[in-house]
Length: 488
Image (tube, rainbow, N blue to C red):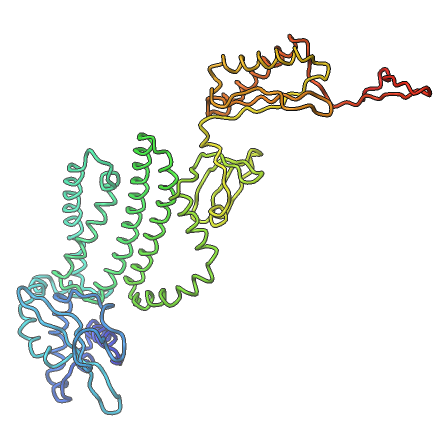
């Protein structure tokens, strides 16, 4: 008969009275056999009235353990399973565990609760209201009477009207903001209306089991709508923070917000999943305990995933890189297009997409080219060996003057020096910084400077050397002469 746990005993009792089997329902009451045969059916019907009209606690919250709950401060053979509230009176629902011949230990609704049931059930007004309906409306369909179905349908426009009024007031109060209730008024109205409608059902004494199933469906729909609303709110909030950060010049906040936004949405989805389990009647305390026990196993099994997750948090929080930055990683150069929970994606100069795990990226030497305040121009010029010392001095003087007179060249560290004699050239070093962080601007300035350098070298009668060798012939008499046209 399903009386081995407090929850199953209450649930099976409700199923029996819902089907009108009050004599069978009497077996779930703590009565003697004689009382079950005489007072039992009527007492079960009166208890049904209290369950349908004054019991608010979810059935899933009642202990489903054979020994009952251990944290309700009740004796081991008793279980507190909620209370009935009618007008200004309340009655505690207590179940007791007894020993029945040929059955063993079972949970029954205690005699101390049954003692006050008749008097309290007579105070329920919903059933007096039901007597005003025609007899055909008392026919039950899908767990509820026809008059209750009609009343529930009539309450829908009332709930929608109240919800519309609340949303209208909220929108007027938030008209200068970007809160989600202003952006999604119909969703907000739908959620409020569903919650109001659920709160109205006890006034109709809708059967508790039907109300329990209805509340589950309603809870799932409300949860879906609420989670969607929260996720949209997170997106809108993150977008607003990014806009403010960009306006304030804090460009690195964007990368941090992208990662934080994804982590927060993942937490919301996880909490929504646990809430969904609770709505469907699962014991989430066992699930949470399993999370604690399985945490160690998860840490080992998902070690790389956790490493990448914390690596992403580290990369974003240190503000080393941001979306849009150009990086050099070893021999690879690319632009950051996304910083995710697992990896960071770069668009390389070959236009391919490179994905680097965050755990690896956090331990790499990363050169952020976008953080440069100025760009280096360094070049080695190889002049002909035939360049005279006077011409070399003039070239050095003119090139240094060229850099000093150009406002696009940063004065710090600029120089042109004769640095050595190579195998096939006289080497000059040109070293300076272009006072611009824009790469395209740097290319234009460098090109202009190199053309001007070429003009100076040509005007001084010199030229640029190229790798060559000169062959000398030793004659029989010991004299040496340079071979004509034998340079290679």
